[in-house]
Image (cartoon, rainbow, N blue to C red; front, side, top):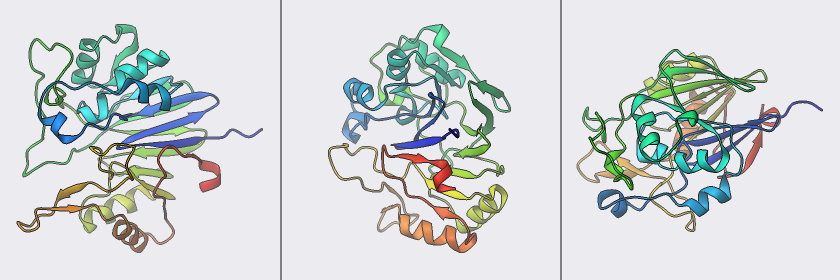
Length: 272
């Protein structure tokens, strides 16, 4: 039987890759805190939902330390025995939240990782800024004690990942344009930036991620998130996926843009 490589979109930036009964996760976040919980008080993961949706995992890659990328990772690794890999802030937060040292591994840009059947290159990436300011960025607060506040999940570094598995190259939220068959990316940015990225990556498949309203419960229909519009009125606009798809197909007509169904397992061989 031929090897089958599958991926699932977990919502937000979360991706699950599986091959030969091995599972690699990137940024799993299922809890989807409402905004009032982000702004006030302490926050806790939805442990029942995490256990339901993620039952097996070997490795977890974390792009950066914000709560919507990291908060659910401690439960994932405790439930599955997986190893979590991330920046210094990510590692300290995991330790603070009770993850054993044997399940925490620090990584740096340009690291080459052998994770079972997955080969991973750690790349620099850029986080979206608000007028040049990183939200929830900088050193971690001293004397962290769980449960944490959402603002305690502070970013020090932001990574992208190039994953090589069974001949496929999959690029997750990159900074530099690196050749890959599948590109997982947040559908924001200017057309010139997209032209440079797409012509550098030359993907066969583009999968938009981190476009959904991650403060909205999974019990409600999915909708795109509201982002600053660059205008005073209206101050926000929702990410327009049809417009993004049209733009990508104009720039590189042979590319397939796949807007994934959450938790559906896609066979990369069938897609390619």
